[in-house]
Length: 136
Ligand SMILES: Nc1ncnc2c1ncn2[C@@H]1O[C@H](COP(=O)(O)OP(=O)(O)OP(=O)(O)O)[C@@H](O)[C@H]1O
Ligand SMILES: [Mg+2]
Image (cartoon, rainbow, N blue to C red; front, side):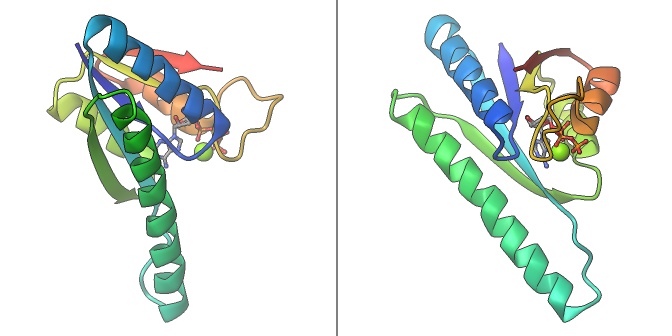
């Protein structure tokens, strides 16, 4: 089973990683972890600096996640992209690489607790080509 875990550094996405780790350990699932840095625009120098910072942050989360699996002797693939609508990147990768399942947080960085589902989660649930698990 190929499992895609999109992460945004949030508490919920950390839980999604834990769920993925469990599946890898118990069922030998092949895990890919993806982070999509929000596109800040590229016209102004200042925006380029913001983009550099965002890229660094989202790459760091991938490194951390990779280390979390490596500590259990499990190798994972990581994918870093920059996108205006992260859900589109997630759905496209799931289609192209034929994932069987996506595990992600129900909410993320902006994490408004009263909201049932964040917009990235909502779009992925509505449009993914495979099973989607939302973790709380
Ligand atoms: N940029 C991203 N790259 C990878 N995964 C993401 C990204 N943004 C969100 N996710 C995944 O989607 C889950 C839900 O986050 P989502 O963005 O839907 O909620 P939110 O941040 O609370 O709300 P919103 O972004 O709509 O204001 C996260 O826990 C994470 O697994
Ligand atoms: Mg979000």
